[in-house]
Each structure stands twice: as C-alpha cells, then as structure tokens.
Image (cartoon, rainbow, N blue to C red; front, side, top):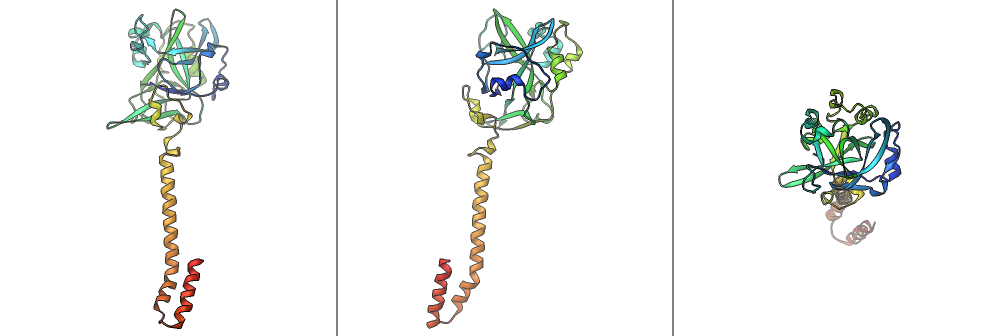
Length: 285
C-alpha cells in the first residue's frame, strides 16, 4: 500500500524531473493548486503526468486530487487511493474502464511505509538511491471537470518485503514511462502488464514518527531519523565522546600512578616537604 509520499521540490525542479533528462513535459495544468510538501496525504492536490490527448504524444503535467471514488458519490471514506496491479491486469471491477485510456504517472521523491513492531509503527522512507525523481504508475478519473488519481501497487520486492507486502509500481526508465503513457491504441496489452512489477535497487530507512500526523510538514521527514540531532547517531556520538573522555582520564591516572606510588613510599621527614611540593606541582600541571 502507499498512503503517504513526498514531493517537497520547488516547481521548477519538479518540471525538470531530476533523473529523466529526455522526458519532455509541456504545460502544467492547475499548477497553482499544488504546494510542495514532504507529507502528501490522500485528498491532497499533487501533480501527475499524462498525455495531453490520446492522439498526441505530447505530455503535460496536471495537478489532481489523490483518491478516486468507488461510485458516483465523492465521499472521502468511499474512495480508492491505491489500485492493485492484479485487478488492473485482470480488468476487474472499476479499474477496467481506466486502464486503457486513463493512465498517468505520479511524481514524487519517494514514499512512506510503516513497519509494525509489536504495538509500535515505525515510518520508513523509500526512494531512488541516486536521488532521481520517483515516478509511480497511476490511473486517473474525470468527473464534472474534477481530476482525481490513484497510485498502482504491486507485491513488494524481496528487498522490501520485510517492511510491507505491497509497494507502488515504479517506472524506472524513459521507455517505461513513455510506454505506460501511450494511450493511442485505447487498448490494454500484455506488454503494459509487464510494467506492473516491483522495483529493486531502492534505498529505505527509518524517518521521524511526526510524519504520521496528517498536516504535519517538515523537510526532516525525508531524512534518516538516525542523523537527526536527537537521533540514534547523535546518541552514539555522545556515548563515544564520553567513552573516549573516560579512556583518556584512565590513561592520565595510570601515567601518574608510579609517581604517586614513589611519593607514598618515601620516608617521612624534611624531604617529605619537597616531595609534597613536587606533588603539588604535578597536580597543577
């Protein structure tokens, strides 16, 4: 499942589609409806890529709302934010009418998933290791000039199955994106079905729990929790500093031990005073 993702890039950066230099995007329809966010949730407005029309290969970006209604009622609790790849390939249910002509690509930096550990839910962020834009396969719906979209999910890859049993379908090449968006034939094919496979080679790490709150917003949501000032790495660094300080103190104490021992072994008398003075000097130094 994919219930939250990030796209905190500025609009000019989004238009450039980092990592896809040959993918030319024309106009951005309803651009002003989108605000860059690191915590995009269902019902949010976000950009997707689609063909301008079926007869033209020209691509455009368009801001749409996340979530396609099950029926004619646009109720928030009666909408699909994800579409299972298995149902799409079978042409089952509501997705049959979208798969041939209403295909799109959802632009993101990466997506969030929660790992269940006992009663705890630990959010993780998954992205391309090289930092390029993550393009997720999607379908869109049009009703009364309102555009809505859903993200297609598939079974998780072997490398991510520990996190969740599903993941978004990620299109990793220019050719795959072009093929997915080509709706000129108005038909579904086995070749399109082959694109709906789990992607490998992604990087995944734990992120702050604050991302779980809808409406919360921070660029730290896409940063590893271990590198935060209050994170695990910081805690280990403090421990290492403390341990190194303790070791240094022990070394100094050991280096002074022979001197202190010799002072204690000298007979009492006038010489004691000179030794006492040396001891005081050593203490000051």
